[in-house]
Length: 375
Image 1: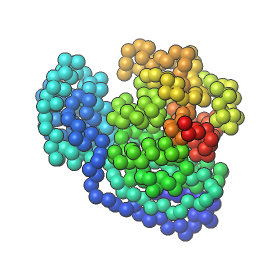
Image 2: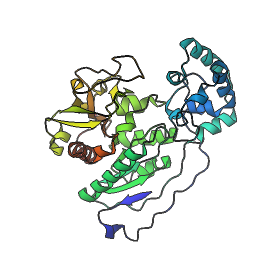
Image 3: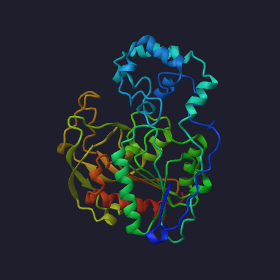
Image 4: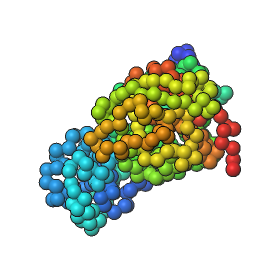
């Protein structure tokens, strides 16, 4: 846990208490949900009986998956895959998946299964020093259960710390899901998801985040926070972010592309963004435009400026056409949401336009209390 004020002197001598370590989590998502082909793959792998079902129909296939794809200790890609979506890596046919689904559904969910499912969650509540009044107060979440790209997380962390120094923000970092509770959130203006992947919140923590936003809190997120191939919290994907990840190019993975700006958006104005710029990153595609969820798009991609090829799907599955949103905002009750899909390459956190977009987006989410009036 780390708190950044505005000067080194302000930080000197600041004692940070350790998180209050709570007992085992008992309200994790999917704790009591029957096994199926739609279960998180990690939950299947954690159960000897459930794993045996897959091994029966696809002998040795799971063992051939990369370790970070089939690991049962987080962060693990297995927490953002379902048993069914893992077929693209195991080569199982649809008929085999149907057989596996039937046999998984027949298994009991034991007490050991429930405990194993909850082990990757926590309800440890960090103790933060009093946030100074009159400053933007930000809580940055860095707990990751899914795919953790350490270079991008660290680059974003450094960029946020530098922003806080430059802007005079008070900012705290945590890897504890237990920080998402009403009392702790009441100390902050906005929470930031630093490339979060995988479910990290218990059911009560989910409700706390929803309530925080409904009452006028802010939420900002970057890149990997909307890049999971499978979600187990529909509200997060469909309402908060407003779009589900489809994939990104792999041939090549990182490409230069043309970014087009909606210059009338208040964030574009605050960031003084040009009408367009070119940069290199990993470019996400989404199943639908976030406009369908009411989002206001800040920046979009020119699909003619880069190649959308990947062995993970058929030709064309990454195409979104003339409307390929890259960064956007939305109102969640009285709360404000900002998301930018830029951010896989560490260099993007020093790229001038991308950095200006991120800084202005966070400031908007934390400060623009009039952007989402009560309805």
